[in-house]
Image (cartoon, rainbow, N blue to C red; front, side, top):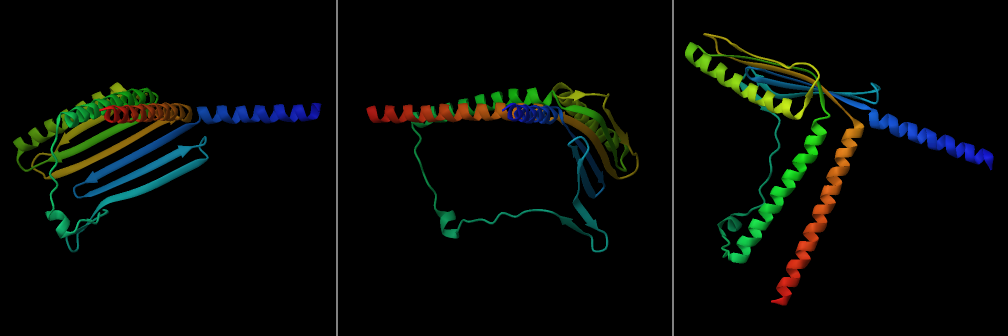
Length: 235
């Protein structure tokens, strides 16, 4: 009996140890994006399980064929299921006060869900640590005035994006971003490199909060549907 208890305690201790390791385990994501005139390329690298698991994926988004001046683009086409006869048919539906009230109720519910989801995601995003952030852009035209205007516009967009990111994320080091005007040259190049990490425990907590939020919303929608059915039957 004592041997069984000892083995049970060992298994419980091992399980708790693994849970703690899982909660504090990091997931490091490295993103490298480059755009050079007509070519785009993304490289994503994920490191987890304390460096044991390493995944890397290179994604060429656009490839320019200089020989025949054609462009290869990865895309998915959705086939239309409508027939010509179906396209000609038009449904006309009258909207009454009850419909308008229902639409407003749905809009209010969707807005509330978006706000609640935003709160949940903000709590998770604040735990994402940005280890390094570098974003360089070269832009230029033969017209010097146009180059200056374009460089200023790109700089403003970058500043706004960085301000938004610094509000929602945690930067371990000061982000580096620059806009380099290339006067009297047609240039459109950018390079973006970022390394960030988060802990599995924070991701699990966010997933649990999302699940609870979804279950509450599902229950509320079900109660609202039952109440609407009762109101219609009582009329």
